[in-house]
Image 1 (cartoon, helix red, strand yellow):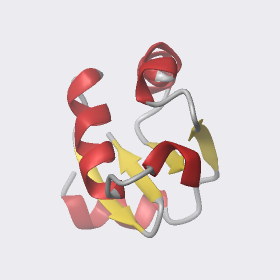
Image 2 (cartoon, rainbow, N blue to C red):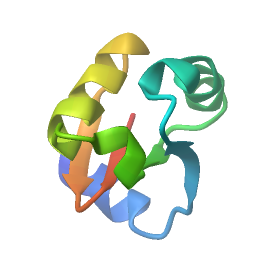
Image 3 (cartoon, one colour):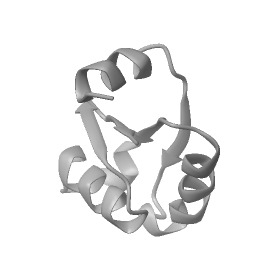
Length: 81
């Protein structure tokens, strides 16, 4: 599927992974499990997780940690495939 088709599909998804003050390391296993079960997962980066880092940087780091594709980031939310 193209990125555009995946973005359309992700539009109605609910956020199922929240990254908080413990950072991305605390959600890597959960995200990997969810990606095994589903095609797309929405991740929300809370203010405590961002600190001085941008959502784009954190999302790219998280995608690399679980060997996933980063489809898009919008605001403080990212969609991984």
